[in-house]
Amino acid sequence: MITPSAIPLSLYVHLPWCTQKCPYCDFNSHEGFTPDLQGPYVTALLQDFDSQLQGIEGRIVESIFIGGGTPSLFSGEWIQRLLSELAKRIPFAPAAEITLESNPGSAERGRYQSYVEAGVTRLSIGVQSFNDDALRRLGRIHSGDDARQALHLASTTGFNNWNIDLMHGLPEQTAETAAADLSEALALSAGHISWYQLTIERNTRFWTSQPLLPDERTLHSIQSTGEQLLHHADYHQYEVSAFCRPGGLAIMSDSAPALTAKYHGKMGRLCGPNGLAAPPII
Amino acid sequence: MPAPTGKAINQQERVVEYAMNALRLKSGSPIDHFTQRTGLPLKQLTQAAEEAQSRGWIEHLDSGSLRATPLGYQFLDSVVASFL
Image 1: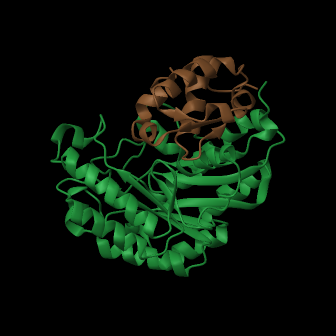
Image 2: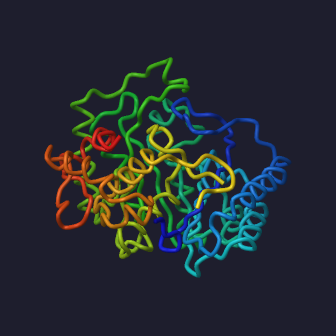
């Protein structure tokens, strides 16, 4: 028999707009964001949530991940509205971790401050690379300096913690440039790093343009060198592409199943491209 | 407790969901959570788990956990697919 009360509950909220769709991205994300979409979309999310409340009665939310898309296109006011409406519907644990994904192109102090005030405790920043050539080949709309600036803001704005999303196996990447990217991320002392290999998915522009990726030998070298760099910098791998420092993940001391639920909240969206599970989207 | 909207996942999907969520964690998962999380008897997991263990993909089944070996962790998609 399933015992729902024993299973930690995490909530993934999807905000599906980006300024520009990246050529490798097969997530549910779309161009054409305008601020007037925020209100109707939050209303629709809450209606969707209400329709499923019956299935989670009596449970407490331990973590929320607001992913995308680029959730940092939403204003602090609308993130606050979303979170306060959710809190009316289901109790949050006192130390609930609430993460919002941000892309470096949209980073500015006032906006980050408004997310802190809305109750966001953790920022996840889509850096992907610090190398301007690599970022251009990836179709990212930000530079390495934009990413450095965003990370500086995240560390000085009052978030409890922040995550760096970093990719490897990028078009034309060498073992040396991959190690340089990772070393720069490690020097920034983020509590958590998601370090994952680029894969070419169907329904993306890269699927048709087929950029030149590193060969298997280089990929293996990038992977083994990277794991060593992370290990020496005191980052513990707890999941395929997830690494945290001591204290970088609030419930590291908890049991593995709690961590599994945590994983859903953090990175449920990553399940989709594997074709193994649909992300838990409200 | 099925959700009022959406599609309930079937028994086979529940086995694979559990295997994926357990095995992608480095530390794996206590095997007694299988029934708690899926509502299915443990025997629906054990046959595939024993087969994966005999291939060197998972380890320490007898200590009550489902955890990938270093080899299995390198080929996790295939290991999870073996629970299908």
